[in-house]
Image: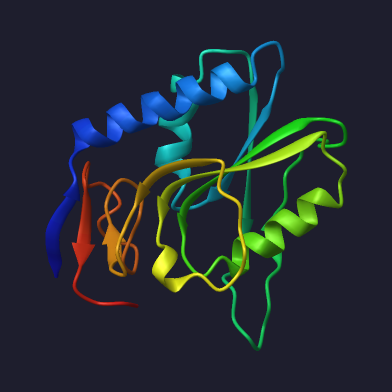
Length: 169
């Protein structure tokens, strides 16, 4: 069941434009690699790329979700060489931070010139890992969120706003 509207489409669009402007300012004169984590970050990544008004490249990667028993692995790795490049890792939601910590460690091993994290949503109440978020869209309470690319069992990605969902998967 979909709950309350947390952020409407105009609010999201405004914040994405602000993030794009921050990134463009910080990386002026450089050509960063904007690297999105699939699947939920795809909508955010597409909008963010259009909001960054400097030359940049983009790529995507996909990982399995973190679990204590199975760990994490890349299902799809980036095809771009990251050595010596400025990398902006784009994630939909930072929750415990465990998955993101794994990704950041793996990417740092590829020796980028810099690595920054950009997250649409930050849920600090559930944080376990120490993650630095350079670009943050919105901070949210400890609720499950759907819409704007985020899903619940494959549903609700098409919603233009972000909504609280009554059930954790």
